[in-house]
Length: 342
Image (cartoon, rainbow, N blue to C red):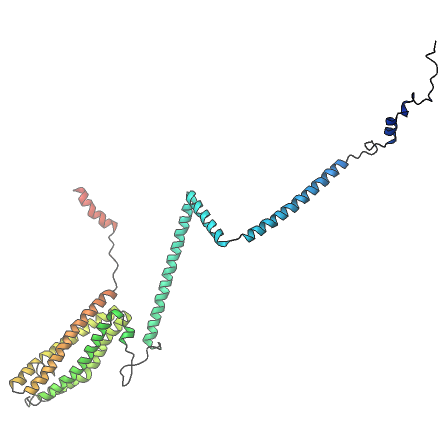
C-alpha cells in the first residue's frame, strides 16, 4: 500500500505548473498596461492633438472652398444681372411690404419736389441769361448786330429776318414798306405844293410850300422814332408796353394821313379839296399830281390799318395775364347762407 504523504518529486516537468509554455510566454513579456507605465495625461494630449489636426484640416478646407467660391463668383460676375436682381428684389419688397412702400413714396415725393425746385432755378437762370443777352444786343455788344442801316452811312442795326419772330415778320415788313412809302409821299406832297403855285392866289402863295417842306424834312424822322422803331423793338424784345405806345402814336399818324387825303387849303396837305380846286380851274396837270398824292396817302392808310391789326394780334400774345381773382371763404359763405335760410 502506497503512502499518500510521501514526498513528491518536483524535478519532473509534468508536476511543475510554471513549466507550461503559455505561462512562460506570459511571464517573459513586459506588460504595457502596468501601473509604472500608466500616464493619465496621455489621453488628453492625444485628444487635443486630434482636435488641432481636425481644426487645421477644416480651416484649410474652408480656405480652399472660399478661394474656389470667390473664383467662381469673379468668373460669373455680371453687372447687368446683378442690377436686374436688385431691381426685382426692390420690386418684391415694395410689393409685399406696404409700410416700406409708403415710406418710399414719401421719399419719391421729396425727390420730385427737389427736382421741381431745381427746374425752376434752371428756368430762372436761363431767363436771366436771355435778358443779359438782350441787354448786350441793345448795347451793341453782339458781333452779329453790326450797323447796317442806312446803307449810305450806317448808324444802327436793322434786320427783320434776324430780330423779328418768324410768325410776325410779314407785319413788320409791311410797316417798313409803309414808312418808306410815307417818306416818298411826303416828297410827292411837296411836289404837289409846288405845282399848286401856278393856280394859287398871290396872297396865299408860298404857305403850302413851306409847310409841306417842313413835313418832308421832319415827319419821316419823327415817324421812324415815334412809331416804326417802337413796333420794331416791341416785336424784337417782346415788350407789350412798346407795342401799346405804338398803337397811340401810329393812330396819330393815321389821323394825319386822313388830313392829307382831305387836303385842307393852307395846311400843306395837298389832298382831295385842293385837287378839286385844280380841276375847277382847268389845271388838269396840277389835279393829276394831287390825285397821285391822294392815292399814295390812301394806300398808306389801308396799309396802316393792316399793320395795326397784326400788331394787335401780337400784343394779345405777349400781354401779361393778370392772376385770377380768388373769392374768399367768408364771401362764399355769405352768398350761401341766405339760400339756406330760404
